[in-house]
Image (cartoon, rainbow, N blue to C red):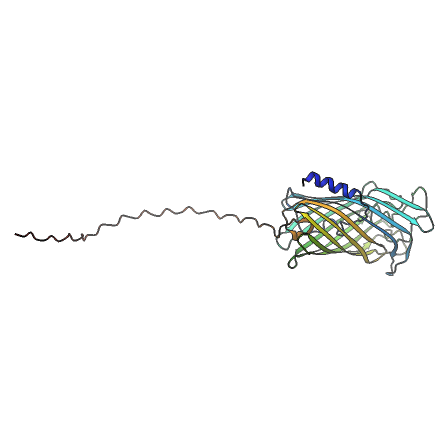
Length: 369
């Protein structure tokens, strides 16, 4: 199948989906230790959906939201080999959110969500790769006064939201519509686990802000640490099952990050899920999966489901997960041929000196008289 047909099929199939995932199919963008070569690429279009009506509060309990949040999103993710040991990625989501109050009234927002841009640098290759990822996210023209908004993935106090208004215009930055930028730096590792399996693990630091490095009481900024891990297993030649984990913990925040100067509500979220990938051929995958909030504080509780199509051009092996092809192992680069030394001309052998002893001449019989 030609690349043009693959792109057309992926776009058509994914455009019919409803979706909602602010992470890259269960794993944050850039969370992979493998780095593509110049001229190679990995692209996917995927969608997911969730509905939530409870949240995890500061006491690890699950009180109701007094309404239902629905979210659908269509995401295009592309990563391109740029330099010999560096790639760049871009992810653009198209989101639709709606919040229906149990008391009546529904507010909706539709548009482009947070763009995600980044660069990944290979620190080590081989069987246990390691990479450094630097990323930036920013709202694509979002309005922080829209409710429930299309930017960010939740704030710190889900109990606070404005009363129903036909105009959908209220400040909701504390929860649904953060409208914040973020900077992140992460290290990712990986390797071959056992026959037919591989693993990845990583950590990151993320800074979310509205006013960069502001220390004013009214500013909105916070610092987080995160961790992610995955374990993939090729159940059969074309079927890959991957378990994924993602966690994020607050380390510090400005006094007004949660819009409450009297108390700091520290958000924490731990996700776990599974992804099933069907490898159609060396250039195309179809995948589906889910991610679930298994623990947290001051975040909504949800179960998300996603489906997508991916295509790539990669020299990586199948043990690089989504980024790899069908090869069992990466073809080793041919060793540099050692310069062949010119064969030293052997000195021409000297002609053997004739022996001083001449061969005895055949005895002649004496002539008979």
